[in-house]
Image (cartoon, rainbow, N blue to C red; front, side, top):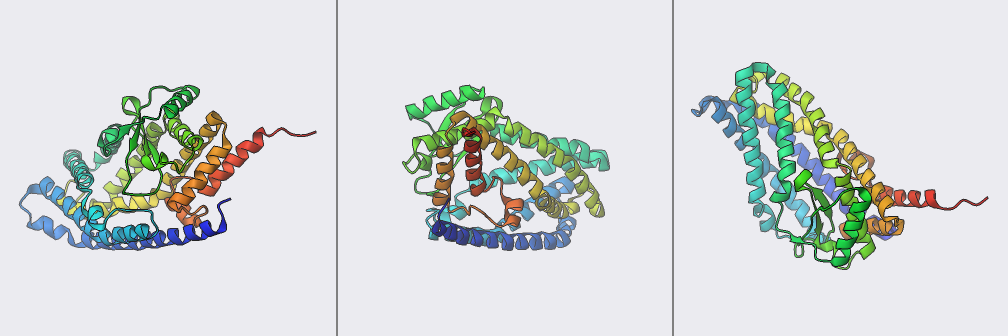
Length: 362
């Protein structure tokens, strides 16, 4: 299916990334645990008021986390460069994403500002409107994400434009903008993604999808998959799932920060960072499962609308070559981390689709 040599190479590459991820998580939780224990002393020494101090402690915690995680990110860049998966320089990687980092800091500080305000006004009942706030912020980010992307250009390939229009018609949608993000000089990996919803919905292809590595029919299969995300309303559905997680998550955060006076007190913020990070890890298997279900639905819809299982199979085999993705990763990693079905599962789905339509003798 993928070839033994490719599978061995992909397994070797993937194992390194998994080891680095595990070590980074140990470092992350150790750092946040120490910060949760020692951070409150900064609150006692601050003259910025409870909310101002809470925001400062949040920014300080995020800065510390960024510094602690930096070596692990550099290790990943080194490994990716070694195997031709990335061409990004170390300094550019470390210091080239200031806009994204600033956006993350700003959004978290705004969230802290509102949550602390609610907690000081409503006491422990803050978690109910607070959960709604988390969903609103997530929805706002998802809606605005197409405007936050790197510079892209409109798809110029007339044949692919016609294919996209045909696939949209089959899936009951229309007029979804398709753009191309130039990643040449950055990576040899191929990717495509759907972003936004409603009037901001958009599909983005990496330029590596269009450089001749993949056939036109394989690119058409990618388009069908990404259109399926929009025609199936996967992004709004993901936000609804996020809301289901946010409600108990906000309640747990309220309960566990009681010991520091609750979320209305600055001293609780270092502990809150640890709690939120732990909640993210604890819910990762469920969130990954939901994502994999949506990706499987998009794969199946792509097969239904292209009726070209050979192209779909070739596409995923091509992903294994260009991205060195392990076709059959360890079960724990797949359950905990993978937002997509394995490459082997996706190829097997194409085979299953073909088998269902094969004429039966007798």
